[in-house]
Structures are given as structure tokens and as C-alpha cells.
Image (tube, rainbow, N blue to C red):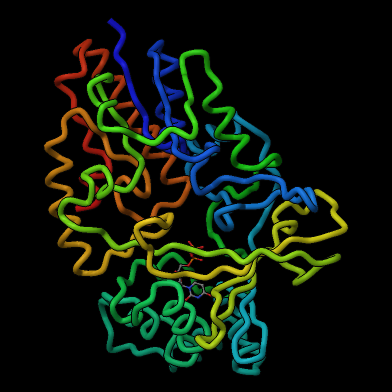
Length: 388
Ligand code: UDP
């Protein structure tokens, strides 16, 4: 007998799992409460300018994983795109991530790579041997002045807490380079889907064994209709927040139009604490192969996620981790539910990691079904293990 799968949330995680199961001949149902697929990666063309807009903020695809890169390229064309971010701090514009140009601009020097390394070491707090917090990581690897200019204000705005309360892992996302490479990412593959992310996810979901129901919130009565659920909504939401709410940050976007080119780059960050927004994205620069006379930009503001807001970033402070641990224990008892993705596993996952993990979940599910011909014996602990 074919098993019935319900996948709640039509982002990358569940699209990939749905597709993999559909290709094995299983009938799957994917629901999403929104009017579109692709979750927070959703893109759509602005009616006024026809520019492809990253509706929930900028997403740049980058990965080192061959399987993931090959996978996404089956579902749409990726155009060459390299993210080169600038940041404005105290009235000057600098190159990010911190590279030789940034260091020379900031200190008004013409250092060689070796000289820059020595300069940064003289700035850095070398007494920190094993940085635990964001602030320690910054003090150890870039020193106080660069930290204050580029990371302190931005991070306070982005996360709403002092950077010394945040884990070092957040800053480890950003490299520090002693050459002029200003590619924001260090991965082998980087690109932008020619027709946007939503088209990619729609293509993944376009299979005769997949039924997609949009504008359809999850209802607990659905549980009994399905043998297994893949849940990519917030982990705490699945349990009706019964133990309390995990902390998330949400984003507000203030859209505005202009003629021509507003800022000359896809993303410009604002490092100063006094500037209320964290960055401005100018969407047409994410598609440099297109031509548009007008332009649309988003000013991005971060704030605590309220009950009716869209969660974007799991915060993972000490208090969140304690609550998380309790939810993980509950999640582990749910043998008919697998929690996947950024929200389902409460981790700061990039798109490529999400897809990699979804493919691995699908591998496990397929292997289990083959072995047992039944759903009962299997429990996929993906993500849950990873979040403890
Ligand atoms: N960050 C910062 N200044 C910047 C850019 C990033 O302090 O100009 C810090 C900030 O805490 C941010 C983290 O580095 O949350 C990770 O940055 P990334 O650009 O990866 O964030 P995302 O694009 O995922 O929001």
C-alpha cells in the first residue's frame, strides 16, 4: 500500500523531499499557508518595474556541495552571480567581507598581504584562544576598531542584543581575507536563478505524484489523514507553543522606487548603530543580465518576531537553547513527524545546506521504506540531532 505523506511548508526542504518521494511512486501532498511556494526564498516580479524582487530579502545561492549544485541546476538555469557587498560606516564606504582593500581603506595604508596580517595581529586580542561569543571572535580576528566600525552596530541592529551575548558561529559565516578577493562567499559555486527561486521550487514540485495546496494552513485534524508528516514550520509552532516561544528575528522591508541606479550595487550594509536599517538591497543588481530603466530597493529593518510576524532568524541565546532542548525532546517522541529546514530545526541554515539535508532525509526515508515497506519503524532524526 502506498504511504500518504503530508509536507507542511513549501520551501526548499519539503519541495526536495516531496520530489524524491514522488519519483519513487509515492503520492505526496504539500501545503503552505501562503499564496506562493518557496518560503522566504520567494521571488516575484515587481508590477511597476518588472524587476525580479527577493520578497523576503536577498538570497544568493552558493555551495561547495556537488550534489546540491547539480540538483538545483536540473530545475532551472542559474546565471553567474558574485555577491560583492559594500558597507557604509561613519560616512565612508568600504568593501566587505573584510579584505585587503577594506584594511587599506580603513587604516589609510597600502599594506601588502603580509603587512596587513601583521597590522591586524597588532589590533587583535591574541589572549583570546578559544572565542565563544561573537564579540570574542571579532576581537580575536579583526580587533576593536574594525569590530566597532563594521560588526558591532550592524549586529546589535540585526539581533537586538549585545554581540557578546551571541555565539561566535554567527560571525564565522564571514571570512577575513588578506588579499583583494571581495567575493562575499568562499564557495566553489555561486549563482542566481534566471527566473527566480520560486520558479525553481515550482519546477521541483511539478510532478504528477505531488499535490500542492496553497493558502492552506495546517490543521491538527490533518494528522489522522496521513501516515507521516514533514514539518518545515517553526518547531515550537508544531506544539502550539505549549512550552513557550522560541526567539526569532523578523524583518520589515521598506520598498521604494527610483529612476536608473540607486546605489550601484545589489547589497549595501549600514554599520552605524544610528542608522535604523541594516542594509539596502537593490533588486535589479541581483539580475545583472536584465535591463531595467527604473529600480526598486528594499530598506531592511530587523526586530523581535511577534506572534503574527514571519520568523526569519532563530536567535539561539542561552534561554532559547534551554527551551529548544525541551522541544527537541518532544520532537523526538513524535515518530510520525520529521522536522526539517531552518524553522523546523531552529538553525541558521543557508539554502544549500537545507537542500543537502533534505536530500539526506529523502535518502533515509527511501531506504527505510524499501527495507520495511512500512512507515511505522522509521524515525528520521535529521535536524533534531543537529540542533541539540
Ligand atoms: N554582520 C555584521 N556586519 C555586516 C554584515 C554581517 O556585523 O556588515 C554580522 C551580523 O551579525 C550578521 C552576521 O554577521 O547577522 C552574518 O552575516 P550574513 O551576511 O551572513 O547575514 P544574512 O545575509 O544571512 O542575514
